[in-house]
Length: 298
Image 1: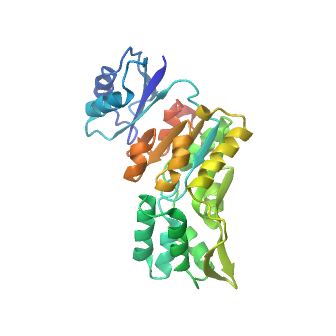
Image 2: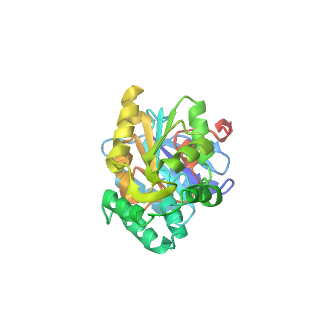
Image 3: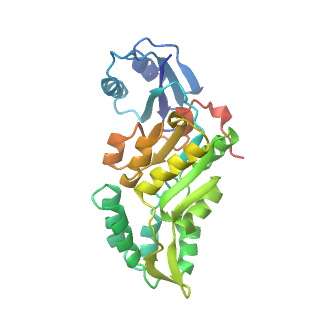
């Protein structure tokens, strides 16, 4: 079979076999269902020829799913398991935007969060928006960074399993964030990512100066990192997967063999290869054909 469509439920035990059958009937030249996890995730292999309209097929499948909390990943079967994972951090691997939480300590969370939201929607250029927000943090005590991480930052469900399973099967795992190294280093350690790249907040005499050390890592840096590690590992483009939620993730999502929008802003959800709105981050493992019993926490 040339292609596979994966159905992933919001939680284990909630993928209806009737729904799976209904979706399967919409696929051309279909094969037998392959359950990756009972009543949670199922592969539907099929042949997709040149005469088929892929976008139309997506719409037909979505109509068959209706309002059921089920995510869909449609892709080629070839190179399905990836050798490189590149992930955004804020609102992707973690449930927060770190800069918004820092701003809360300066009494400016609403103001900063509004700028963050507009930048992630693609309404503002990332670099000037970051400089503007960081400038508002001038004078904040460096100890607040520790306080924010310890008290407010939480891994999104599935982040640890995603990283550790891919590493267990030989893939390289990389966080590339428009956020800050203070947080990416700690999130990478907590989740099990091998490499992390981000911006560095300038600190002087124990206080934030309101500046970021240049150059700022934004959309281009994420794309460059994906390309650098892909080429360094001698991987084909199709052997890479990227995940993110904001406009500054678009370039790497569109470059990756499989670009996944996770709880993403509309512009990202529209342009990514796949979107995860219901399941947790282990959906990226099911998308690669991993069985539930292959998942690793070690």
